[in-house]
Length: 630
Image (spheres, one colour):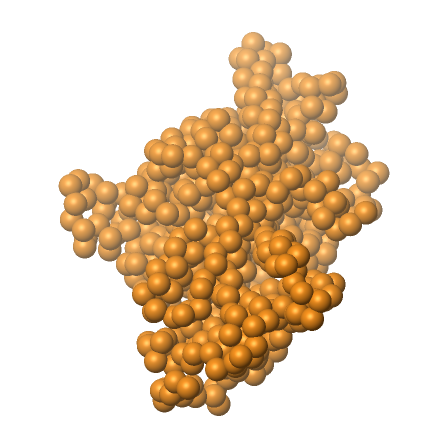
């Protein structure tokens, strides 16, 4: 079986560029896709807060839970209104990165982008670890297989995302709605039983009570701040809608805002209800038993509903990773378009998703799962710091935006974003400081390093652009001096110095030269045709539309037609530019299309491929001297 056949089985048939709009999300499927991370946070945020409180306060920890949870609820409401304003002001997505870039500056935008990048990858790792923990709670015998199980989950969710937004939204949407319903049923049933006197608080064994009795302490501000920072993971996911506005169907802004507020209503209901039910039943975390599983056992008993709850919880935690798969590839594509990430992140795969971004998430999350052994509690200290930093930068950027624009109603919008900036800045400091000893200090190194790398990627692309840019293309163009009439095809993507060098070389070896462009993007093709026509170059340009974004297949089809007309002594020469880098790391920033095309064309007996090197390095200075016509 060929690779193409395997790819079709795994990913489905390749979609055309025109199918992109049908792949976008509406409200029905947009809600579960965007809500899965925030909804799933309920499954571990409450437990993380209690894991801070219980070792100090013992079984009475639940009585202080509300003091740590209430600020989270208030902050969530403020962030919801703040991000709805970002959606209105920035319809092309990008969230904190775009807001910071336009209003604060390049350095701030890179820090915001790096923080979001780190947080999205952490979302995947934490969600999959928590999903594994939920299964271990129900089936303790599988505990030794925690890491392989988490990696298996990662493979499945990556594959489903590679199959496209529309298909993955239905696969992920139904379980998300199922979790929402089972959680609402848990909360409603729990309170009905409490009010009717049919449900008693959870009682723990003497051994567990003795363990907590030995650690009884008193409530302090620092303890509540630590619990608050642990529960702030519940806030992750609220920003993803503003980052992924372009993934919604038109009118994309209206749909995105409606999805955001539906998400807020769902989270407020589930998070608030879970907190109240936990306090009412006096649940605390114990080994191999999550708080959610204890609530389910108390409310539903050891019956089918309990196992449905556990399965739904595990599934929603697994699917929470999908939020990152929707937000991060779009962000990487925006960063790549601005030159801060490799250009390959802009390319859409067979199913019109940003497949390179999806593969990046898979690799980074797999590494974290292996390093931290898929333990949620080991990963949580690194979680939420990045997203709080991006919250702060986006809110501060919007304050500057409203002060500059002064559009109608800007004062109340400025107040909302100003309050958001103040609260998230405070939250950033609290989360970072309270988790510092547990490992959050690592992010003080990682986030600046990622921003530094992005800064230098942009510097490289700027340098390459200067090397390739040519103001007067025709002044350096050399007309054909050859008498040979064998067909010579020159593959061109744009009018730059490398294309000029290949065209001039083609004119040396043949008088029958055709420039060939494979158009995977209509706008780029139109720009090339306009520039080509304006230049007056005597070489004809043929543009072949490639709606499936394939390069090699259209070239081969074109060559097969040309080969059919060849005389026995004739040949076809295919010329391509090959960029020569001075450093191996720079090669990672450029695609290897030339290599793959040249390798594929070797099977054509009457075709010769020639790679024309174009060198750019710090030592190379492109000449501006005019080349005389011959």
